[in-house]
Figure (cartoon, rainbow, N blue to C red):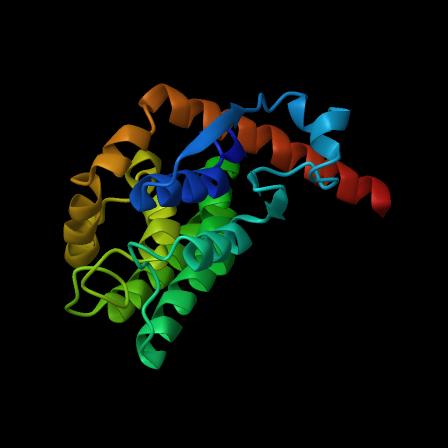
Length: 221
């Protein structure tokens, strides 16, 4: 059976969790505490970079969430979550990359930066730009790149559904609001939805990690 190392506070782990549930793949979940389990020798043997998620499937280890999603799609192709038509496939990939590289870093800034800072204001502007771009990619379809759920929806959904908790009103983006409601009606998304308490724990974790990272950078200088 596939083994899934995760913590529900991790957006990257949630991508994989949702994909496993949406595809109906049987798995054994190994819940890792984020205050030290990733540094234990057993886990370091799986991922020396100390990141979750990790899966081990029939003895084959996969790290990095996007690589895991591609592996799951290839090995467990039903239901299909990647379109085959070139433009639709490119749309899925664009959504994944824009979410990971443009949208999510700004979410981190909203969590960490003071609300009266220029960095906070800039993050909100960048989020608005990313959301409007994603609306263009969604077009008139029910899901990104397809009329059926794709891996793009899973990657974008784990981030966009958290925005109301950070003061971003999805009703200002009607198409994305309707899309998010479609996601929330699905059993997998209902099962994995973060509680308010979990989201506050996630925010605390982000603040700790950003502070540690900035301290490391300043020491490096």
